[in-house]
Length: 108
Image (cartoon, rainbow, N blue to C red):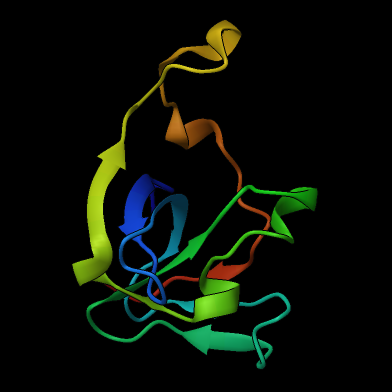
């Protein structure tokens, strides 16, 4: 699965938008990180699992490890181009990014 970068509305504060990587799609099993209460989660129908890059290796990011699976209804856009920092401005090459989170893909 391509790890695309999406703009989502915060599940707890819908007036706030955040940029996160989509790690898992519906049916995928994601091996979670703290503070998620379980070792792994199956992404339910109509949801995605997102993770952020913020803070110490993403450990301080408010993402699915904090919220749980995110409803697809909260997705508002997809990031395809970076403007800042200027030295890395250009198209997002999502295929070059290797996730650290283990995901078992569902049969599609």
